[in-house]
Each structure stands twice: as structure tokens, then as C-alpha cells.
Image (cartoon, rainbow, N blue to C red):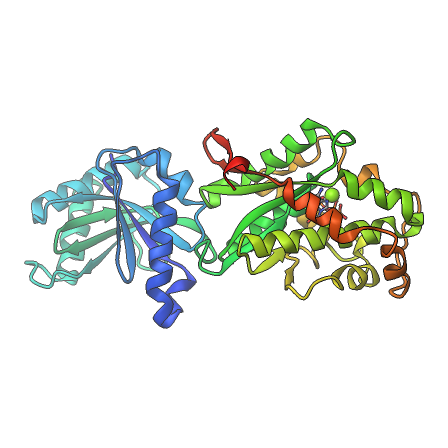
Length: 400
Ligand code: ATP
Ligand code: MG
């Protein structure tokens, strides 16, 4: 049976009082962006529900896209028919003929927002229940947790029948929380961190540090491919490549080995913060996880975090590596992440990084560097692109 509509139930956003309209509008926009390849679909966003009128588009292609949109709790593909008892009865029978295998229990759940309709909900439940028993005399009705719950909704514009309730992604619509800069390496953790930030409504832009020729074109492409894996949740992601070679060479030349890592990370954070300011972001998101590597001890975090007051959200900070990997598998970034391309941090990784850097030593070593000059040069050579779910990728660096 061909679905004509999809009814979307909002998640947490329905509790957000007067911000509700903003949330609904944003969700509506995100749904439209995600369904850009289905121009005939019409989105009608109401206070309690959202309706997608499919106008002939294929629900099988649309359903997987909807499961990735944050802010949707559940949704039900449905069939809209004329508000005529006979037609509704026949449709209910046709649906059951398609899905009933002889084993399931069922119930009819009717809702009526058109109160002028000829039958009330109890009468309709009975009429339709009987219609099903007519064609399947042995079928069992069960009110609590039936295998098949055939929902019928009588609205002013028509009658809607559905039997599937598909789990949505939950969370809040991306963009309702404002924008954050995601420090995206080629590793396992940062794409997962980006996913979680988006889930709570944060729109992200990806910031990636590259140190050619030490890091390869493939390593950059890997970061872009990872960003692309995150686009189904948002439509497109702005990707910023940051030239980092000079900074790493200078650090290596002038700073004692034990402090390479601390100072490299401080430079990354300073640059990300400068980019955040330029791009009007509010926060920084990264994939740091407590205790995972030398840069992620609490002492290191203190020494690194010192360069900015901007809030840094670390969604995977308290997760075990295995938990992060499970998430990476779920969002399909894991296979990409484990491809063996060198990262700027691995190439310049000191043999023995300090896990407890001494705060007072850091400024002393940084004085040996032209911090402002290096940041300015990096900032002048950022490479911007937009990565969208479809293949198109554009370079906007000339326009900025
Ligand atoms: P990941 O799996 O995300 O690479 P990791 O466990 O390898 O993380 P680190 O390499 O110490 O950890 O990096 C910690 C965080 O710093 C990363 O999660 C990421 O947010 C940021 N980061 C590291 N390298 C880069 C890079 N080249 N470009 C942008 N951000 C980076
Ligand atoms: Mg890494």
C-alpha cells in the first residue's frame, strides 16, 4: 500500500514553552533541507505534529532520511483517504490483508479532531474492528500492547490510517542551540563528539588542522569524508582547513620536547577560538576523552584550556573508548576513522609528552615563538568549503 503522508511527533521540544515556535520552524527547515531531493513533498508544521504530504514521492526513500533528523521522537507513515466510512473500512481491511500473517493480535485506535464526523471514536473503533474480524474471523483483539496497532485519525481534511510507529533520532533540532566549532581530526572520537553536539541542537562547523607536506592530501580528504558522514543530520557542514605546518615546525625548533604537545594544543585552541569569533560561533566542541592520551589528563586539559574562556563542550569526555567506538559504528564513521593516514599530531608527537605539564613553564617556552604572527598567517590562509550530503563540494576561500 502506498503511503501518502508521514506524520511526525515532536520530541522534547514540545515542552519548551514560548520557544516552541522557533523549535518547530527550525525542525521544519531541517526536514526540508534533508528532503531537498524530493521537491514534491510539502511540509506542514503544526503546533503538535508535523505532516509531510508526499505528493507521489517514495516513502521508502524518505523514511531513512527522517530517522536522522534530531527533534523527531517518532513518526508514522500513513495513508490518507476520503472521510467516508466505507472507504475507511476498505482501507483498513486492505492494510490488514497486507500485514497480518495469521499470528498477530491487533487493536484499532481512533482519534478524531473533526468532531462533526458521523461516528465518534468508540463507534469507529467498533465498526473498523468488526470489519477486520469480517475478513479474519480468528484474529484476536488486544487492547494492551497489541502486535498491530492500526491508528485511524479523522481530521478535517481527511481520514489517516497508519500502523507503523518508527523511532526518530530524538534530541533537539540542529541549530536551535546556536553554532559551535567542532575540532575535527581524522580520529574516532571527534566525529562522535560532533554527532552528540548536533543531537542537542548545536549547529557545527568543522575545523581541521593540516600540516602539508607532513600530512597528506588523503589525510585531509579523510577529515572531509568524516564531515560528510555527519551531513545527514544537518544537510551540509562548513569545513575549514587550517594551515598548521609553520606552527608545528616552529614549536619543534624552539620548544623542549616534553612541551611540544601542550603548546601545539594551545595553538590549536587559540586558532579555533579565533575562527569561532570570525564565524560567529558560541562554543567549541572537541573529542577529548579523559585520560585517553597525554593531552587528555586533567593537568593537560588545564594547561591547554588556559588560552580561552570560551566554553568547550566535550561530549565524549566521560565515555570509555569502547563506548565511543560503538557510537562511531552506529553513525558509520568508524571504518573511515581507522584508515591509517597520518594526522598532524601523530607526526609531531614527541616520544615522551608531559602528562603533567607545569603551568609556569608554558609561557616561558611560548615567548620563544611569534604566536600572534603565526596565528595571523594561519588565519589569512584558511581554506573554506561546504560539504553537503550530495557530492558537491565548493571552495569559497576566494569570496571571503
Ligand atoms: P580523535 O579520535 O578525535 O582524533 P584522539 O583520541 O586521537 O581523538 P587527540 O588526537 O589527542 O585524541 O585529539 C583530541 C581532540 O583534539 C580531538 O578529538 C579533536 O577534537 C582535536 N584534534 C586533534 N587533532 C586535530 C586536527 N588535526 N584537527 C582538528 N582537531 C584536532
Ligand atoms: Mg586524533
